[in-house]
Amino acid sequence: MAENTEPVARGSEESHFLAILSRMKYIERWSLMRSSRPENLSEHSLEVALIAHMLCELGNVRHGRALNAERAALVALYHDASEIVTGDLPTPVKYHDGTIRDAYKAVERSAEERLLKTLPEDLRPTLADVLWGPGEPSEDEAYLRRLVKAADKVSALIKCVEEARSGNSEFSSAERSCRAAVDEMASELPEVTDFMREFFPSYGATLDELLG
Image (cartoon, rainbow, N blue to C red):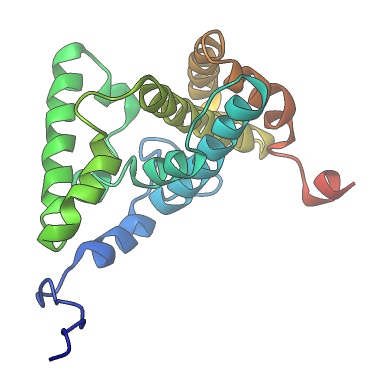
């Protein structure tokens, strides 16, 4: 008798996971600021993914690392997914003091766990690995996640520069703060130094300027 090779269905329950993620486009960032052009969470996540991927490639090609650039892009795409549940808490509030920062981290974790529960059970470990990584991350994994954090901060600085270019002084203080944070990261992460020297200056330029 021939062996049945039909795939086994793992479950038939409806999953809301991707429909929830699609709502990132409704979460506006910089809620306390007057923006010349609003930025939503979906746009930000894509930009962070592109920057994180490039930072890893810079590390691999120029600095002898063996980073998974595709994984970095995926981690970056999900790095703010909890804000679909929590909303974007303004940075001055989020990092006002250690108590608020720690409390918000707990809220973020709870929101991420809530999102995970909307996935079919057999798929949850895969996304949990993307969100949180292994319990004891390797040196490469830890470094990769540092680059994703750096990409997040660079993306914020890009937004500040673009607002300044549009004549909006609302972001002046945020630009100084973001630039100081990026400079500090660059002192420890040579990939960030490379990115800021070679890629960052083009942001905010017109299309005619970019295409020559």
